[in-house]
Length: 262
Ligand SMILES: [Ca+2]
Image 1: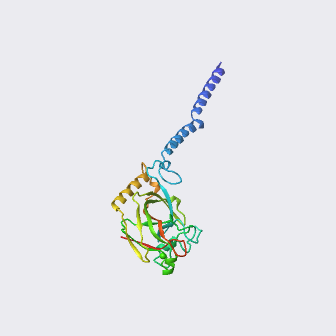
Image 2: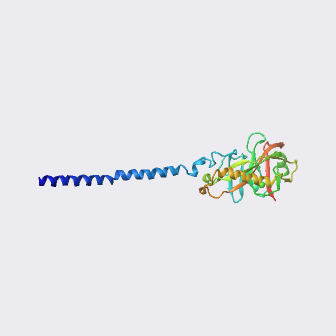
């Protein structure tokens, strides 16, 4: 009988020990960790990145029509053209590249590179806030003969974009800008004279700067994301060939230089 009680006590002790062990099993601990993990997952759903389109970095609920413009960007400025004569290589400048517009050298010009007279072809360049005037050496200024033999621009269609640099897509050669078009477009008429034309720009800068703020607000979305960094915002001016003076020999439209002034 005494032995029976000892065995009973021993069994009771074992039972209590097992029950105690069970409360501390790794399985139970894992469950609580899972719950912590799940809470983390829920926080991920509020990641600000989720509100942007992965490819463009533009908020999915943006109000404006955003387009992307890619352009060469260097200390010399931002510029790009829709085409250039005698160069199909997008990785280097050809003899009539857009860089010739900004080199202060009248013997080198940009020439569009499509079949026909180039109406609809364009170049785009960055402009500083507050500029009032353009100076344009229209046509090929290397000689009077080259001026006459090639097309000159008769009319440009001018469009301004507010462009926000997209660092995430930057390459060695190109910068990428998320852009919104400013609604006030204008035309630039040029006489057929081999000279430097001075063009006063009909830009209402107060209005354009207010528009820039609206564009930035749209880009930032509902709340700001510090990971997107400080914004670099540009005004981009697009000059599109809308009409031309016909050259005697070649159907290529040329512009030798463009300067901006305050
Ligand atoms: Ca030039």
